[in-house]
Amino acid sequence: MFIYPKIYRKLRRGPQVILPKDIGIIISYSGVDKNSVCVDAGTGSGWLAVSLARVCKEVYSYDMRDDFLAIAEKNRGMLNLDNLTLKNGDVTKKIDEKDVDLVTLDLPGSDKALSNAKKALKPDGCVVGYLPHMEQVKDFVGKLNSLKFHDVHTVEVIVRDIMVREEGVRPSTKGIWHTAYLVFAKKESE
Ligand SMILES: C[S@@+](CC[C@H](N)C(=O)[O-])C[C@H]1O[C@@H](n2cnc3c(N)ncnc32)[C@H](O)[C@@H]1O
Image (tube, rainbow, N blue to C red; front, side, top):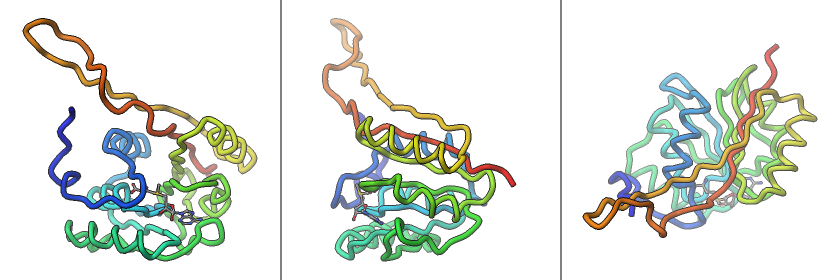
C-alpha cells in the first residue's frame, strides 16, 4: 500500500477526492507553477484545490454546497493556504476570473462548464476534465472540439504497487486501479 505524504493523511474527506496519482499528472501536464492562477470546480473536499495552491500563485475553487466548502475550508486552514479562495457558485452559470492559466473540472456534467472555462482562460491556457466514465469523456471531447480547443489529450493513470519479497518480486493484486480519465486541452491562441 502506497504511503501518501503526510499532508494527504491529515486532510479531511467528504465527497470523493482526486488522489495524488492523478493530482501529480494534472500539475505536470498542465505546466502550472508559482506564477500560475487557477480555477478549480467542484471543490468537494478540496484535495485538488489545496494541492494546486501549494504550487501555484492563486487558486479560486467553486462549489455549490456549503457543507463541502466547509470541509475544504478546514483543509485550507490546516495548511495555511492564503492563496486559496473558496467560492460558492455554479460554474456552469458563471466563472468570475479572467486570464487564468488552468481550469480544472471535477463535477457531474463537466462539459457544461466548458464555455465558461474558455472565457476564463488566457490564450493557450489549459483545461483539465476529471471524468470517471468513458461516455463523459466522449461528451467532453466533443464539446472541446466544438469550442475549438486544441492539443486534446486523454489519459488514465494506473499505478501498480510492486511487492518486493524474498519469495519473489511482482505486482500486488491489490491497489487503486480506475479512478477517472483525465482530458487535457488548450484554449486557442489569439
Ligand atoms: C467529486 S467532488 C470534487 C472533489 C474534489 N475535486 C477534490 O479533489 O476533493 C464534486 C463536487 O462538485 C460539486 N459540483 C457539482 N456541480 C457543480 C457546479 N455546477 N458548480 C460547482 N460545483 C459543482 C459538488 O457539490 C461536489 O462537491
